[in-house]
Structures are given as C-alpha cells and as structure tokens.
Image (tube, rainbow, N blue to C red):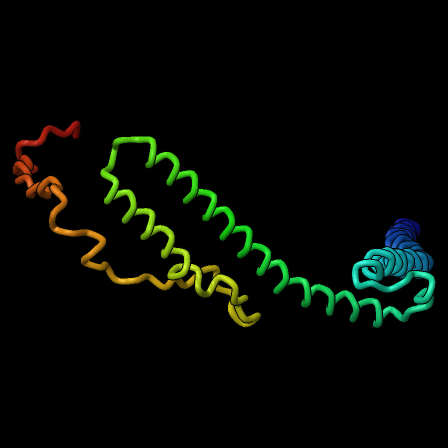
Length: 194
C-alpha cells in the first residue's frame, strides 16, 4: 500500500504544480493589466496633446485660448484641417506642373532657335503644338478624385491626330515591310540531350 500512496502523492504534487503556475500567471496578468491600461491612456493623451499643439497654429488658433479642449474636438479639428488641405495641395501641384511645363517649352524654344536640326516652320509648329498640349491633357488635373475612387489610374483627354500637325509634305522614311521568318527546324531534327 505504501507504493500506491507514493504514486498518488506524486500525482497530486504533479497536478498542483501546473495549477500553481497558472494561478501565478493569472494573478500577474491581473496586476499588470491596470498598469498597461494606464500606460496606454498616457500615450493616447500625450499624442493628443502633441496633435493639439501642432494643429492649433496651423488653423490659426491661439494655444492659450484653447488650453482645455476635449479629445473629440482635437480629432475633429484635425480631420477638418486635413480635408481642407488636400484640395489646396492639388491646386499647388497643378500650378507647379504648369510652371515647369512652361519653363521646358521656353528652354526648348531657345534650343530650337539656335540649332539647325529642324526648319523654322517645323519648330514653330512643334512649339505651337506643345503649348496647346497642357490644355488638352491636364484639364482634369485640378479636379481631385472623389474619396470613393481608389484607383490609381488617371484619365487623360487625348485629342485625335490633326492633319495639320503631320502634313504629307514631310519626307518621312517608308515604314519597313514585314520580314519573312525562316521556318523553325522540326522537333525531329532538333538535338536534345535525352
């Protein structure tokens, strides 16, 4: 009977050890949970305070007048500011693009006037075409896409070719004709390592 008692004692001690460990870990979690929650709330509050100090000067408000703002108010101000800034940035981008385009055309005009690569008439037609091009391809550039559109594609209005742009008087080389492809060797004549 003694061996049987020894087995039951060891079995009981084996069963109590895991229970003891799980109990300890459960107690540890219970004590750590309020600390973790306190840290999380402190991080949120600190981030909201930083956001408030960043957003108030940007929207033209005085920090001293708005020292006590609710968290929801700070978030609403930020959302409104970000919604308002998007169209303004799009407008600025369009203006910078147009300025750069004009600068490129001016530079190209200087280069073409000094070089003898093209005739004067051809270069003037090219410059005229390039000056009209931004009006055609960038009409929708200022319009911001609706928030429902997540497609990265941009719609371009492409004008059809005009006969005056490519007059028949230009001596262009004829387009090359199709070259016949030599017949491929049949699979019977092709050497294979297997």
